[in-house]
Image (spheres, rainbow over the protein chains, first blue to last red):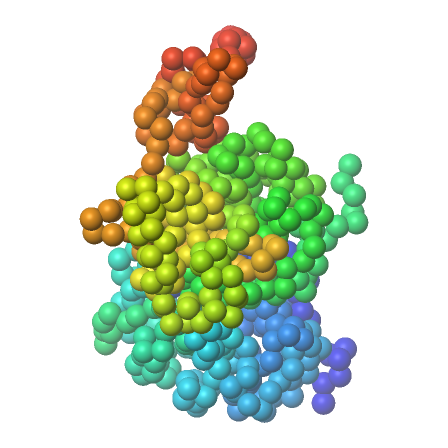
Length: 202
Length: 300
């Protein structure tokens, strides 16, 4: 059992760290495929990467229902840390979540089970924060879409391997859809619902 | 003196989180208006409360802020917003477009081409392009959901039928990423082509109407038109009277009660920059500026 006093700390400077983290995430979202670094550091409960923790402290609060995958949920540290620092409610039902935290990508549920928004309110959709192995080495992905000048090249070791195929629903459903933020340690790459895969290397 | 009573950039952290989440969704769905819980700001609606909230949510201590009002850095609105953030966030401010990392604007896009490191924040009075055609929010929302924009084309067509050309001169509707029709805020249609494939991120904030929307960098933005009546940017057919620029957007200034007028660049930073480079117009800049420049040269 961890007591509150033993929990990993939040940001040392709440205001400026949140601002700096947000700008990295905003730049990532505005330039899909580009790797952005999260600079400010907070304590991280195990199973949560540094950038995941920083994003949680920056964007989560009582207005953002969360869904955690089994790996995240089984850690009482993660639950306590999120509850103490953000106050965000953790839901059993993934279809009402504003954010989903995925530590074990092989167990990523079908994307249709998250909130996709409605045609009237496509913004009411889940942002998936997916922890991956690497955002600097691995397969090459060529992406296009708004925010990208021509095509963007991303080298990453992403699980599930068919993530981009699964994200194909974004093309069919637009403007409804799922936005994904990939996290590897302190690196962040965003794949908003407008981004399309051009080619996938080996 | 810097009163410590404000949080950084005025807004409280919970509000910033809410606005930041809205901004992320706005970027993910280009041109879609994300509702947000707009706050009361210490300035009246119509003075840029939406833009100010967006700026407050993104601004950091390393940013350099530029604020323009109709292209000018020197009008009341621009100066008071610049001072507001200098006081509440302690950020550096500038009037030079290339130096700024965040530019808040009311009704103009700077003449200088924007770059990748910049964010342009628009103040928007009425974000809904269909509002004057259909007053009911439930209906316009449905129209956006179905991409049902025929009414807008009818409006442009009626312009042509009545005046022989599309008479909409500002807030000229655009289609973003081939999906959402969007109000570019009341910028002159001269500025519309600058939004297309722009290197900078463009964010729009409407405070009274509680909407945030965005155009990511390098996104297709098309001004609505017809094959036989293509979109044409409008510009007074005159050079700037101060810097001689032939391609900038001009303000018309009445100079006496006998019908005299002069045309000057609406973008003051662009105009001053050109004058500093030695460009002259027919009514060149005030002599005191020449003197000051001469003095600076002698001193330096």
